[in-house]
Amino acid sequence: MNTPYGLSRRRLRTWIRLLRITRRTENHLREFLRVNYDTTLPRFDVAAALYRAGKPIKMSELSQMLLVSNGNATTVVDRLEKDGFAARKPSENDRRVALVGLTEAGQEWFKDLAAAHEAEISTLFADLGHDNLTVIRDMMRRLEGEPDEQDV
Amino acid sequence: MNTPYGLSRRRLRTWIRLLRITRRTENHLREFLRVNYDTTLPRFDVAAALYRAGKPIKMSELSQMLLVSNGNATTVVDRLEKDGFAARKPSENDRRVALVGLTEAGQEWFKDLAAAHEAEISTLFADLGHDNLTVIRDMMRRLEGEPDEQDV
DNA sequence: CAATAACACTTCAAGCTTAAAAGTTCATGC
DNA sequence: GCATGAACTTTTAAGCTTGAAGTGTTATTG
Image (cartoon, rainbow over all chains, first blue to last red; front, side, top):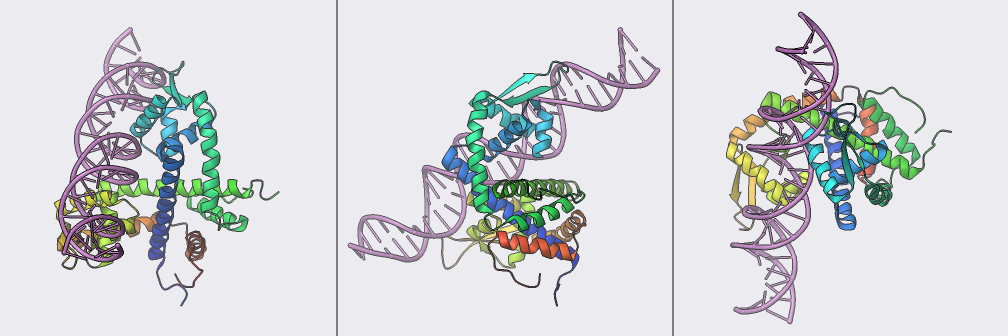
């Protein structure tokens, strides 16, 4: 027999496996950032989002990108700001809005970090070649409800 | 061209996608447990590990299963104990060891929870049928460095 | 058998995270 | 214009999480 479990049970097991891999990878990266760069995963995540945006973004955009609460974004940005790596400025159009971006120092700091981070991921995922990556991408897209596409 | 990005970059993108799906699912489950069962994800995780074990286990075994620190296991078990769902007892062979398990009340409580949890996951992963689940399982196994096997 | 190391767990301080409440500012409808 | 509600951010309280230090127990080893 090839599928001794029902659909529901198999989906649960898949989720547990997904969670385990994610936790393991996160733990590894946390340790990596702590030992080699004396920083944390949340700070890295925020910096990555800001760097990727390329220009100052709203606090709410930031928390939506990272899938965390607004209050969370506030405190992490506070710390990055205290480190001199991020800066807030009020929006000119809308005085409710706080725009946040990386400072010069923040960009310099993050560049090294990003390269090292990508290299570390590549090591952790060394068993996945192009074919496997394509398969996983398609599965993930399906899970996220995106239509199948080509390239990347 | 079918793969415009290098291996390293594709692995990074895969990781980011994995992380996004995991966070989204966790956020959904957190809300689900909070609204319908007035409990939290960490409590559920601990209870699931204890229920699955079927008998009292060491605190250190628990934290290893969940991939969290020892101190973390301590506080979550403290709360479950305060709720009357978990109980510690000292090991007889080794007085350093604390064995923790679910109480009767804890098992009753968790049974409903587990069923609802599995149903919710099954809904979230509704786009994945047997074939897709098998593909994902193989990918995850590869990532975890396990040899390929048959059946679930 | 005594000193030392290894192990198991808890405690602690700091940081992370959430949900809810509070404080501003903007948009809408009357 | 002004009230009312919506949007944006921060603050707050509680809980979660980590890494390191602390406490007690067992194993090693000289």
